[in-house]
Amino acid sequence: MCGIIGVAAQKGNVVPLIIGGLKRLEYRGYDSAGIAVVSGSTVSVRKGAGKIEHVVVAKGFEELNGSTGIGHTRWATHGAPNDINAHPHTDCTGSIAVVHNGIIKNYAELKEELVARGHRFSSETDTEVIAHLIEEELRRQGSFRHAFQEAVKRLEGSFAIAVLYSGEPDRIYFAKKDSPLVVGLGRGANFLASDIPAFLEHTRRVIVLRDGEAGWITSQEVHIENVYTGESVDVPGRVRTISWSPSMAAKGGYPHFMLKEIHEQPRALRDTFYGLSSDESLAKAAELLAGAERIYVTAAGTSFHAGLLFDYYMLRLAGRTVRAFIASEYEWFKGVPGRGDVLLAISQSGETMDTLKAVRLFKEHGARVIALSNVYESAIPRESGIAIYTRAGPEIGVAASKTFLTQALALLLLAGHAARISGRITRDEMAEIMSAASKANRLAQRAISVSEGVVRTVAKWFSKKGNAYILSRGIGVPIAMEGALKVKEISYIHAEAYPAGESKHGPIALIEPGFPVFFLLVDQHLKELKGNVMEMKARGATVVAVGPPRSEILSESDIHIPAPEAPPLLEPFTLTPPLQLLAYYTAVSLGYNPDKPRNLAKTVTVE
Ligand code: F6R
Image 1 (tube, rainbow, N blue to C red):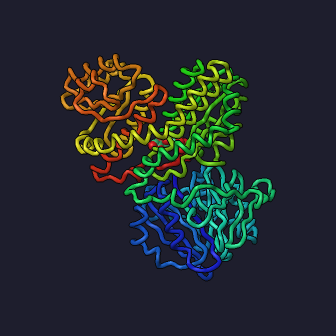
Image 2 (cartoon, rainbow, N blue to C red):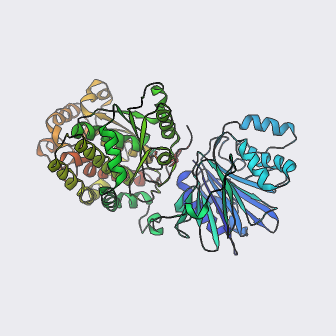
Image 3 (cartoon, rainbow, N blue to C red):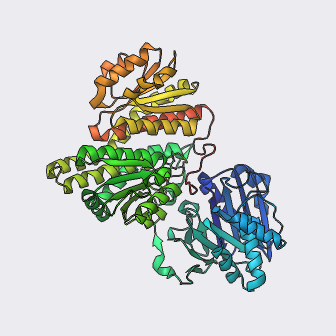
């Protein structure tokens, strides 16, 4: 939902750094882009609709020059994606430029008030009120710092803001509430960005800002305070050096981030396994689950599918039922949770607003919250009592891939430990789970190697289809749901996942000759799956079997995408990669860019 960047350098031109940063943030939104720099005592702005690569050239970003600047890549909320609504937005004098990620809920009232005071607006965005509000406060306050603070205090909603002011040409002011913002401390330059990969090439020393924090950066200085209380933040005490390397955020020779991230899964799984094997937070979370009265799990999109795997693992291993719910439906649970209950909130970004709202609701009711995220100190982990982290590294492709399987692995370990603590499994059984989990990386590696060649060919055939079903049973159902989401998101082919047994209760009505039906071959349910395959065949479907070579199913299938054998709880690691690759190669066959699917943003910080 929009990416912002700011760079304050001691000398030189920051424009190439801002453009580079915007390209790395493009996964957050890509319908328009813009940049503002201070040169001398003038703020210059260039912006326009379209993908960054195009706008940079069309609007002559590189003609600008300055050592302090801000940039923005947009995912439209208020106002169509066009040149005028693109950020940065300026005040009436053109001396204040603002970039913003989030939604200003009270912008209509503020705009009315400012218009009555004579301010002229040029865009339809909520963001533009911020520039005029600061301008208005500046008339009263005299000091820009105070004007900025007063303006921020009047904003309701979510925001990560970076502001340039011609009167203080070496500074970038910032403020953050409910939208992510990170400070990067470099040599001779400091950075602000929505996400670390934007400046990872230049520094690994970061401060993850918290809600209510505001301040400024120059090339030499970082000042942070709580805008509502005025309390200063101990900046050195908040600096963390992160372990991500710049190559993790680069394509590394792959044509797309998504393909690189699919291939990175074995590494990501290995790091997650070893990172969590001796993780105290995981142990504490397992203890909490073991003692919980009721257990809930919530998330959105891919993370929700990982939540369904957790449901499965908890039932199988710990004998506990888990109520899984889509985060945006959190209001169902108003008045429901109690003090003995535990909510597990899963979010790779840690910033998804729906999931954050669910966390807040459960906390208000006194429930305990565990977060599982891939981004250290992001909003959801910070607001949860216990935070567990996957070690997938930065995921740039908009469609989640490696983060799904690392979540699945973390959740298997969590459920295993909860089962052990509650005495449901023996020490030896736990050792078996750990030993199996330690092989998840190798299983994913084999799944990629054995399926990729076949999938490339199948994708050419599949790219001509308009619809598909992906069916399975048991643990295969969440995997099928994840596969269908990937296919929809990046290849724009309508794919639906169902429990195979459910298909005859309605979905089968759509089957006609040549309709593609993918079956995920999970070992425990082969007999029933065979029955479902026969039902589909009898109606002319083209059956694609995905899994190990099970002759009883392959004899009835038209196409086979191979996957290796896996122990029952580890089938997500062998059956997911072929589906991710199918979505990827289908999108590529159709000429789409899988890294930037239309209408989507990676981090959804609006409700
Ligand atoms: C799917 C995808 C989205 C996210 C969802 C939740 O490929 O990327 O469906 O899974 O927006 O995001 P997080 O996990 O960051 O809360």
